[in-house]
Length: 432
Image (cartoon, rainbow, N blue to C red; front, side):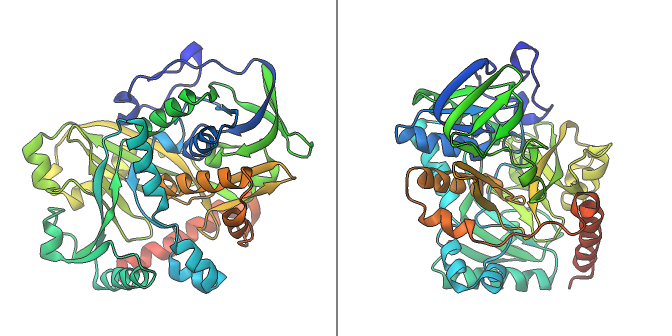
């Protein structure tokens, strides 16, 4: 899929190649005024915009490239409940009240996505089931502790799987067991974003594509967003650029770091071969710090992702980086043709907890989902819309959660994080 009017094209991913038809949307031109302006047409912006449009607000979304061009259209497509930081970590850092609050919304994002799919008839290949796999007995203990903790909060959609039970879902010898979350699932992520954009527009929302923001005035009584060819003055501004916001808003730069992850897509495997590998068509991720994640596409390709590059740069050879991991899990796929390989950035926060807050009185932001943005962004979009509509109860909880910049600032945050990842990867290899 390529951008209209010579704009920025989508990455050469399987998702872009199999995207549903989408209209050409013009760039912003001239000076305009509106109730709410949102920067970023990814899940956070689309979720916020759609919730507000349903409430009758006049909303415009400004996108530097195309709808879903960033992480929302490139990710693994997995509906994984929870945040990157565990409920146990949140309780330890922020107290029982915050942990209880977070536990009450960890499944909300998936519920919102399913409601959107039903209400607006979004064709995005929704499948049910999410499996977490363990390489070691230590991993299994970690999963069991997680299951028991979630159950203590009343979340009882998960069950432990021993090695034989796991084989009913994943035909691989490398794991000792796992956990299945029956309330998880997977989707075609770009088609979800395109469907949400279409729903937003049907309710009167406007999206301007190929309109990179050049400056933002968050201190004015009515915030102003400027591009090379126009501006929007609004009562309320929402910043949802996440890992792709760049240097436009300096106050947000130190809060998150872009991190790239990679995915490859095989040729179609055929119904029989695909069923042999993944009999129940669930999505999978393991529990290591630098993990593998994978699933089958609607046309029975293996979509296999993993790896991290701190700072958001692309590796020189994605296939060389991911193929050994895929062949370790599925040696049956050696020699299978790879049709697509791509990279995309997510925004990592130092605490691994998403951030939500305000700049000035009338500018809101949300970012830092740390690899759990598919569901988290939909939840945060609803919470942002609630706050803008006058109910700040849930927004205030997240706004008060402390955040910390990466040690060493922009210059040293990448090497600091690399050293940390080496340490956790070593622990994974040692099984501790």
